[in-house]
Amino acid sequence: MKLSTKEIVKALENVYDPELGLDIVSLGFLYNIVVDDDNVVFVTITLTVPGCPLHIPITEDIREKIMELGAKDVFVDVVWDPPWNPSMMSQEARKRLLGE
Image 1 (cartoon, rainbow, N blue to C red):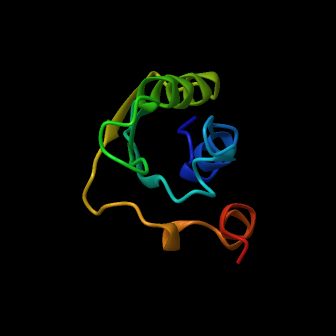
Image 2 (cartoon, rainbow, N blue to C red):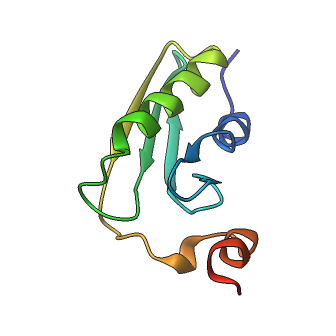
């Protein structure tokens, strides 16, 4: 059975940025998900700044969470365009981090 982007997004709500203490979905780090016919998943994310040392543990956690759903393989691409900015966060994340 082909994985849905909805179930992948739900799983990624359990991947946290350890410095910010919020999940990557709420933070607006998740840019795109593609699932091919063989259940190989391609995820495009960003982080707050280029060179962020947490990209390795975050991408490994993403891969692990999606593999647990039954993906054949997972590829995570970290991009910097468009650059992340606080307006990409969910309203709840903005409240927690920015007090909005």
